[in-house]
Image 1 (cartoon, rainbow, N blue to C red):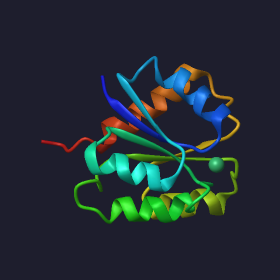
Image 2 (image 1 turned 180 degrees about the horizontal axis):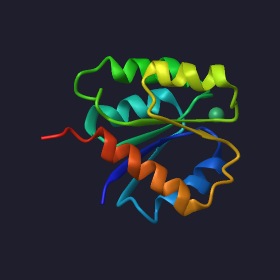
Image 3 (image 1 turned 90 degrees about the vertical axis):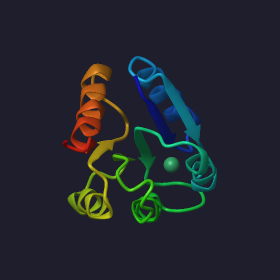
Length: 128
Ligand code: MN
């Protein structure tokens, strides 16, 4: 069981994700803004971050770069969530350090989506 940080400003999307993530994650921490997520990341190291790319106070790509630049947080897998699904959007998210890209609205079967999230956490685990 693991902790996920959900950074998403839209209440309906948060509820949808919360319901899906509840099947797999022990703890779902929610942040509506980059500022709120920053506060949480000072105290908690989640196993996974779901990052809305359109946040009210900062674009999600810049925020991903900011997180990836912090040695304590850099290895946390981040999955971008966006309504934009153009190749250039996906490439930009990957270049910033996102390991996967989920398109809104969420149409995946919830368990297919959870498998994707789990795969990202497994790939991020350091091999020993
Ligand atoms: Mn948004």
